[in-house]
Length: 386
Image (cartoon, rainbow, N blue to C red; front, top):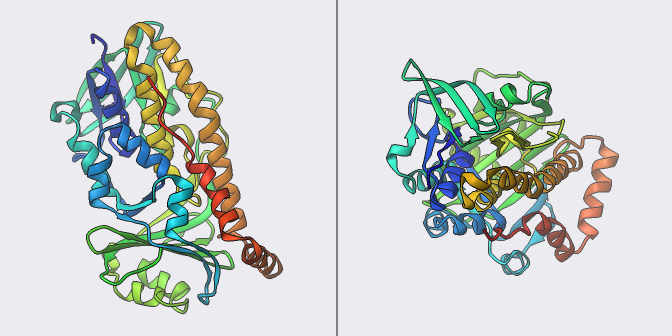
């Protein structure tokens, strides 16, 4: 194939897109602004849609080897009372495959290793992207020096504050604060744990077993943006230290330097298109969403697989391919983003005591198979055929 694709951003979505294109014959260059290619973060859950996408990319088995199938779990109150429980066998029957807890760095490493080393260019900060009917150009600073690449296709996978989106979609207002700040950590943990989420008024604590005797925990509270504490672990202990077991034990096993804190942002204004000329947006650059459905990385993987399938015919059919990508991905990913925002308002962000009581009662009265079926519809996706 004579065409050349440039992927801006070397995160999970960018590497998955590069791999999808590479597997269909596209020469690919990935531009990552960080000096070293790596993934900052803790853990994540890969639902069946993401696992099917990784299988389509040829790396599903390798990712599963680094993760842990999700243990039975469900929803609890801050006191530990179960509101809803999920059986692992039911989960597998509903989704076709079990969900997987995996460290972000492990997933990133598998994707990175599946690409030719020569395709990866670090310390490359994009300064401008232009597009015309015949292709696109990407200007960047590579190791401090000006550089430029011509491309038949440019994929903007550069995250929440995408430079590609800001250059080619200047009318879009960009990300907005979702009303929540969150702490995360991946720690050593040898004892069995459920995959569970616990709710308190305006607060949520979740735990996900990972591979290699690790567990990923996160804590989230409704708060103004920009808040920081001298000791973030102490701030989490102050807010969640009296919650049910094993929350205090998880926090006691965490070192302060393991804790990450980020305010949650999303694209509150949906994009009218993910494509402009020969440029396509993907992942958070296209549809950054809140994490309340655990679908952020999953949707980025769906994007990547769909883009690769659409572009398998090469540069000669690229306009039709990109139109297909936008047509297939934008409605679904934006619907998932809206559903995730609703889930946050119904879950972690709910604070009024009466509303919390009504919600908890409703969940307790809903059969678990019904709740699971409702959640499973967001993971009901299969890779497209080329």
